[in-house]
Length: 237
Ligand code: UDP
Image (tube, rainbow, N blue to C red; front, side, top):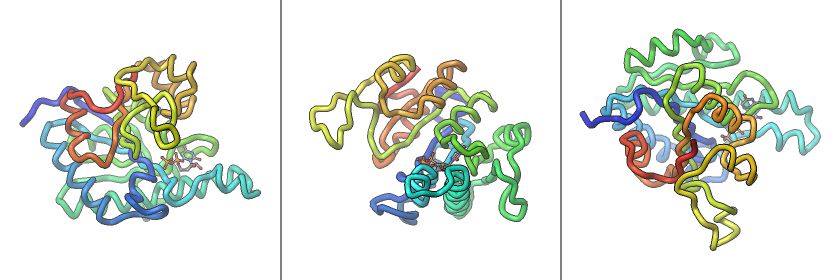
């Protein structure tokens, strides 16, 4: 068993990451490959909780831009994260990984409700806990959910698997000369307005001293490398 640098982490998977090469929905091949990678990471002995986004299906802000009530649209976004969470649970369980989905919006037929102490007990038993339905509140994001759950379950770090391979000084898709940061402080993320996470999530991480590692999800083994303490993407503290 290789030695993990962290004993408990939250992995944040954006909805866009689950879409793979598609613009919308879930790419089954990609979700299977990420499940394999996560299973492999368990061999390091680290405890893993996962927060899944929903942007590949629905984003509240997009609904409200088209005239929907923002609260209603956000609840739709939260339900999208439940769909993604079930898909990820299915992929993990097919590989024999014990997984529990806990949802912040109660739906007993589908998943356990979020109960902090029960989530921690699952983790101690080596199960992966997937936190679905965000915080359960509109006007928040799944990045904030990752920060909140990390603080609640005493996670040592948040591992943010994105389509972009780190934090840049400007959008690398629009600016080919954008420079990637190796390390950053949260206060600089806020001051420079860098698009790592929304400011609520950044503040929560900063106030609770939770480090964040941002890296590309498409390069295999990045999650394991981050957990083993190797340099990947951008480290924010
Ligand atoms: N959402 C919310 N409250 C939360 C978390 C998420 O209202 O605590 C809604 C919000 O509408 C958001 C959507 O769920 O747009 C999907 O989450 P997010 O945009 O964070 O997903 P990602 O960008 O990671 O795919």
